[in-house]
Image (cartoon, rainbow, N blue to C red; front, side, top):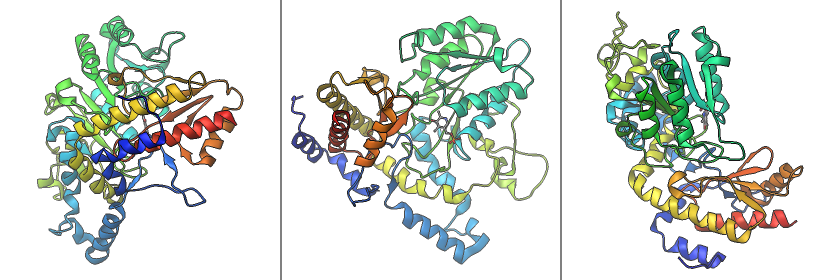
Length: 424
Ligand SMILES: *Cc1c(COP(=O)(O)O)cnc(C)c1O
């Protein structure tokens, strides 16, 4: 495209992009002086869809009017709220409908799934993760290993970037999977690495794990709603995600999970609760437990519905825009941000995320060079000037233009604010 990197060029791009209309459907946080902040933090907490508060109020009204009858009232139909969300959740995950479920929260779902899919034996008990794994995932995996009486010091194997590099290499992951071979029980990797924004090849990694007789699970916290996914076709065994990052479901919103259909009816043990019991007999409170068909059988408790109601507005937007269009917009937006960073901040920043657009999602992780010692002060300054992004010690900021609501102008303003802060 052209090399015009001006604010006018950003505005012209926004004006020419019909998808920019979605932006008006969100609340943008404001600075103390009333101006909108530049919000590039949708990888951490997505913004609030404008419709969400009306939906929450409608739910509160149902509770007021109906009490417990809200579960079975044909209009309110609380019992099936998660079912109404299911088609979009399944589409986002690339799952058959029975393979997806909207339930609980991310780390809890990982534990529930590992209870079924991590069945270690003396011979085969290693779990492979990546060295930079999100701490919650590492805690979950290490505690699963210890729970089964094995030692995380030997049973938890981690693959990191090579010395001097920031990104994982698929060949290193695959080589370690082969090396572990018959010792390897489970591979648990992210769809998108949260620090660097690197996308991993789920199909290739699942294939490598299956090749040595292991299973492959994926944490899609930073992938869902960011990239098109095809978990069924990619042959992932299981996956879990949260709904408050790119999915804009609100803080701690009800999460989701995927179980590949080849595991249905496999008789694997699970940690059960009444909500996983088939709806036909759930309220008979009878023995024995009869799991719902598919991933829904992993539900344990009745859903905190207030955590689920805001997803209706968000999922309607995802269904309306569609992930292919969203991804096309994301490639253009993030590419524009990358060019602005490269031209305007040349020599003062380093982009740690993959340069190949196919190897990343929306996020760019940027090292602010020459800021050692004052990195935090610089970040605080950016925050005060109205750029909401994410800070990682010692000197990395993560900028995520969310294709659902961010604009080319947002990207331009972010770079202008970083430029000013670095020059101050
Ligand atoms: C955001 C995130 C989490 C958070 O887990 P919760 O159970 O929702 O608190 C866990 N893992 C990864 C990789 C994340 O990005």
